[in-house]
Image (cartoon, rainbow, N blue to C red; front, side, top):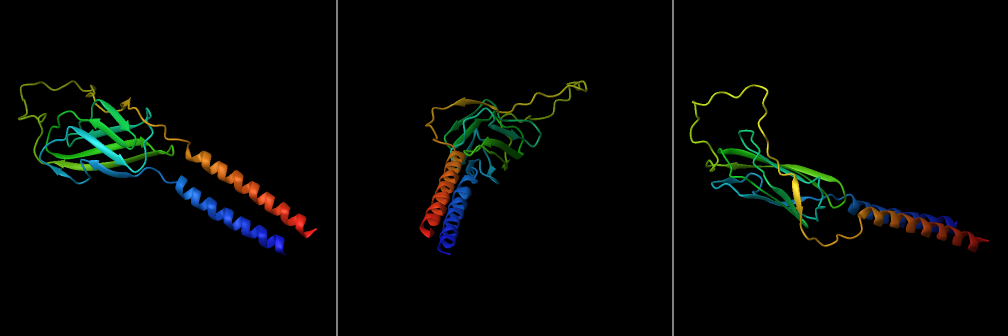
Length: 193
């Protein structure tokens, strides 16, 4: 009876430990702040978008950031930069007044992609806004697509090594708990004999 009680105690402690580790391992990066912030109303167009996360972002080729204007044009240009938990991308001078959408997809510290949209409003037309439509130009032939600019290329910033991936710690904890359970069960059997 004592062996069964000891085994159940070990299993209960192991389950609690695994739940604690799994909760930490399942936590993806979360956006802490952005500049411009969601819902901002700006008189002056920003020159750069800055996203700050709660954990380091992996400096990978898959990180993307795009800014779409009210006219459907893409306004992000240049390189997406990652410096630990801060992601930045330059913007070309914004155009018409209206709502702009910042869309991003980054690689989380735990290896999962994180994506979200942030909306801000430019209340005054930017430098790239047309002053008046030019009626002297002829229409473009159909079938030609407008070129789009999206900031997807990034430049590596010197960063510290973020350490061992989380999954290694989870596997190690499972192995150690399994070894402890096996040892406890064998010790319980030897004391009953």
